[in-house]
Image: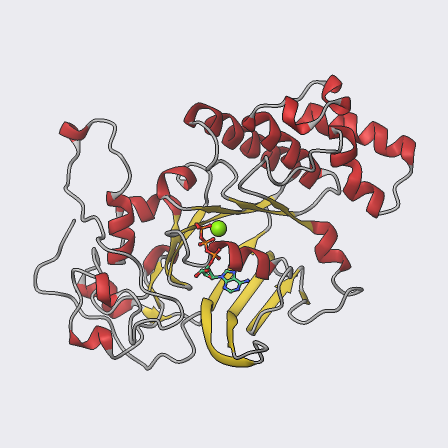
Length: 357
Ligand SMILES: Nc1ncnc2c1ncn2[C@@H]1O[C@H](COP(=O)(O)OP(=O)(O)OP(=O)(O)O)[C@@H](O)[C@H]1O
Ligand SMILES: [Mg+2]
């Protein structure tokens, strides 16, 4: 059996834009997720990073089949769940859980912590005594006191509330947890505590994580691999440390520039920061979607969609004029099977001046 827990192939999520008196005419689409492919192995953490509005939450909800994709396929534990109905979705509903960004809004204020954490167990028909015992275990697992059980969400800090959300996600012993910006609403010191907790839980329980964040600093130490998303597409996918040392896509380089450097005077290089607003996903730019903001863009970029190109070391990027790759690496590169379907057969080119090395 393959080691892939989750396989996402050419997934699209286009939301129809409706107009007319009865909103009965479709006048266009918001291309929130457009031709995205990746795999997630058992026990692996894949970081998913990109600016606000690039489609991270939509992709997360789609792979969990809270939304039905407009196109492409989703395979979970070897089973195609792309269009699965209620009954066939049962294993996914049990084995894949979601933790939300806002730990305040995602917990029902009228329910005590014990009821919140045990709700998924109740839905699965687990008896009262067993639910009680399991809640005790779960609270201990996420570092909350047993007394938390009878208290209400408003009595907890943001970090503690996120622990409650994590305990709820763990209740049904999932294999995959999708974490949608799980620490973005928290103070930096609390962020570290939650990230460490997630790390420990992964080791103890053998979980896989899809960890969504809007900046690269947060996912660095938790991710095995990182996917960088721009305007509904994955533009670079790489082993984590490699991405920070050798970004290939100019957008990744720009995102790295947005990470504060602890000791600016010792920073070895000046990195580009991407300017302006991202274009609308209703009418995305032709060719490479990043070309309107890219400092390296040439004429070709507005015409041809760059294929996701596989370089050495499991590092892939979709750019006609990649950074930090030599001619030899380009010669050895191959077009990834995960490439956008519409892309032509094109080879990346090296600019005369190698940048940012
Ligand atoms: N149900 C919907 N109907 C129409 N458009 C939607 C819907 N949900 C999301 N969108 C649009 O899809 C795009 C992607 O949104 P999404 O929430 O996935 O982005 P995100 O990367 O999670 O952003 P953030 O970092 O702000 O959470 C946005 O343009 C958004 O307006
Ligand atoms: Mg989001």
